[in-house]
Image (cartoon, rainbow, N blue to C red; front, side, top):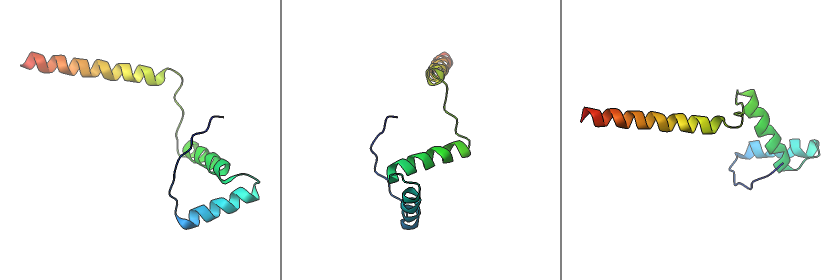
Length: 76
């Protein structure tokens, strides 16, 4: 899986819990946090969009903007 380096700020107790949990599971802190973030996103309802969904949403947005501009021009 591809990775991306980021800088995060976590409260002291959260990072201590995460470090202990990662060590207990034999994982690096980065790996443990990545898995935890993914689990939490899914638990709270995030679902990845199917391929092409983002493009179709962008096209719909562009069409909406074009229609609004046309309507504004017609009103003068």
